[in-house]
Image 1: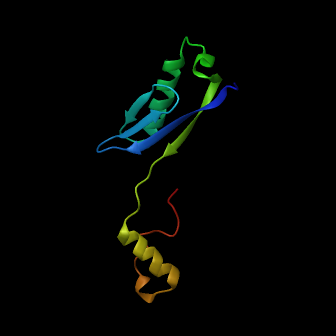
Image 2: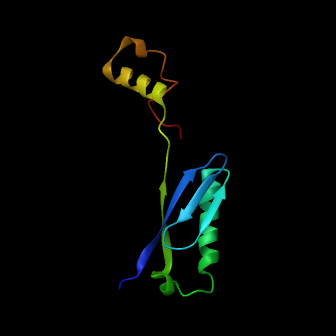
Image 3: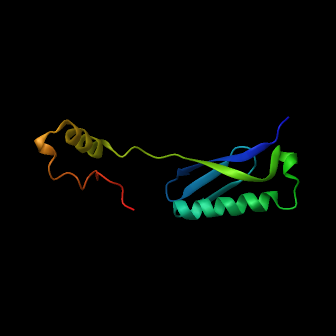
Length: 105
């Protein structure tokens, strides 16, 4: 059997914190922000595999972490503003702050 090059993890927003859980190995962590959660996930995976043979888990040495992030829908109001703007509806003027045309950098 070929060894896996990645560890899959799912991240989702809980009530107050972001939660991250690996699929192949028993690692679960959390953080107040998405960035903090991802850093905690990297550290937790490294600690879990420390002094272990990754092949015992079906993994190559130093596997990558493939993260899937679960996002909630933007909401009906933002979608409606987007739909009106796309259709050329004059009522869409002044709603760009609800659903910006570009993502902030």
